Amino acid sequence: MADIFRLYGDEFRRQYSLSYQQQLVMRDIGQCRTAVLGGHVDECDNCGGVRVSYNSCRNRHCPKCGSLAEARSKKWQVYAQPPFGQPEQVLDYPDVRP
Image (cartoon, rainbow, N blue to C red; front, side):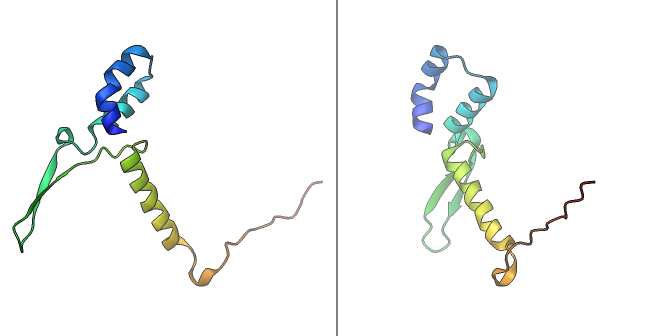
């Protein structure tokens, strides 16, 4: 999707009226994991191999970043469940109508 936004985003924005938020999302996704957002270089201590890692946009609508955030939250939900498979408690309040 980022490649599509980079290639055709300007033309799409000229042709269609987008809200400010939609424009920001397109910009973020187009810049995701590119030199525009910066990055860092990792070097292997054993072989000396170098790998450049670019920073992500962290936008929840981004297919790369949003799915990572969703996976992290699902992982957290698994840890947040009560131990030993105990079901959640549901409280029923008695009907107190006059």
